[in-house]
Image 1 (cartoon, one colour):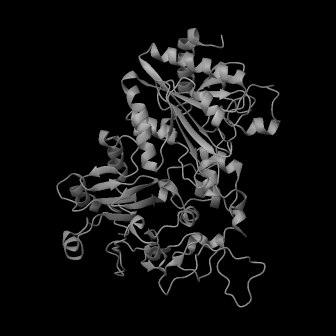
Image 2: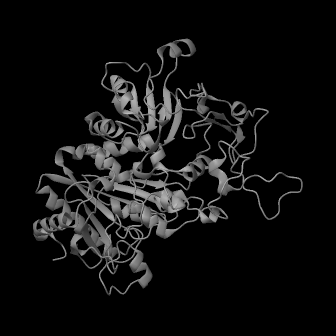
Image 3: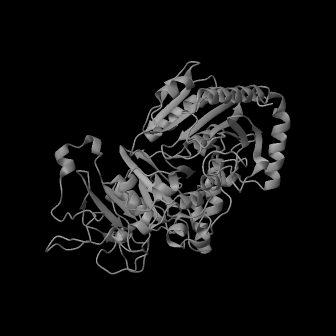
Amino acid sequence: MGDVQGEDAPDPVVNKSAGPFDALLCVGQFFPDSPDQLEEFNEYIEGRSRIPIPTYFIGDYGIGAPKILSGAAKDPMNKGFKMDGLKVCENLYWLRGSGKFSLNGLCVAYLSDSSGGDSTVSELVAEIKPRYHVAGTMAVFYAREPYINVDAVHVTRFFGLAPVGNRNKQKFMHAISPTPASTMSTSELCTKPPNTTLSPYTIVDKASPTDGATKRPDDSDAQYWRYDVSRKRQKHGDSDGDKLCFKYVSSGSCPRGEKCHFRHDADAREQSVRGVCFDFLNKGKCERGQDCNFKHSLQEESEGFSSRRSGSGTGNSNRSKECWFCLSSPSVESHLIATIGEHYYCALAKGPLVQDHLLIIPVEHSPNTLSLPSECEKELSRFQSSLKAYFKNQGKEVVFFEWVSKKGTHANLQAVPIPSSRASSAEDIFNLAANKLGFKFSTIKNSEGRKMLRTHFDRNFSLFYVEVPGGTILSHAVEENEKFPVQFGREVMAGLLNIADKADWRNCQLSKDEESKMAEGFKSQFEEYDPSR
């Protein structure tokens, strides 16, 4: 269904006559445009009227949206790592941000307006190659011819849906009955209708087109192909190289590497981590305006702890200035430093998940803590043991985790204290989150866990690992084309602690005075445990 805008719930008559349907997916705006519609809309939200089938929506804007969705996010039933929707009311689920989940044997991937612009959608669709792609942001109905995917046997069908109740009476609802690919034969998957076209993402060498061949639109226009591949449009640059790669900017790495047709810009990546809107960085403007949850100006301060001791003598000056964790950075935030050892230092995290959320950071500019020399590992072990003892005295345990990107710059091992009563659940919830993403952790259950991890560490792969209370280490080597959320560790911890609203560090920012008070409080209490004293 296209833009609902609070118009109506699924019609039970339609469900009975044309269905029955298993679920309804709503694309575009879901909430009303006018306060006049809110009362009728709230009939469903407050349970006085019933939504007949499970309904999922991504449009998290409109009249009443902030209040209703804020309430849903705080509901104890919605805490944890929930990619299959936050329950708003009976049969109504909010697909927040982006993700994927299983629905009646089908894999459903979703991306809300607030999670990415046209270029982001184009890049994502070209990568995941869905069998069906449905959108509702252009306010018209459009059914494109099926197209062949590059490096995949199946075709993709695209549908653009008009708003519900639109004046032109264009189609706003489209029913599909797809068979899960896992139950289809190869011949069924390979079937191509007579009107199938080439992929709109096909790259053609503009310098030497084949004689007699019709030149296809280049990839700089790829975000427009869904509605009209023939009309002229203003371009934002001479080539793809002028546009930013969403994967690199959002995660710090791109599986296509040098083959990527978009720009890998380290400065844009840093601005993204600081909370700057991708569309603003990519286009110089954002069409969502005040409805956008991200910043529309370049930021001087980063999310990560940016500091560095002057005169460290390692690395060049440019690296020290750009890196958030190098102690010689000119934007040093020394008020967050708790203690400095010979090889590691400890700092309070910006946007902490909980009080005394800490980062253990190598003094040297190293992309991970696993490949450093043995003397560094010994000091890291002392820091970890001291933190365990410190928190144990408070009735808490510690979870340590690290995201090791093979293209990472400066490592940080995160230490998050949790109540002892939650300690036994930590391993289970990480395994549950892994299952939802489609992978299983490798488990090391002995006192030599980190030693084994260091021995088998392969720098050709990115890696996530977590040490849960009791010493068990769960690790996962991330494949080249695997979609792995870089904030996975924090998101799972937020679920474990029933503080899902704090999974995003931007919701946890403190003033500098508050940060200083927090750091001083930790330093004074940790002093007797500090291994560097």
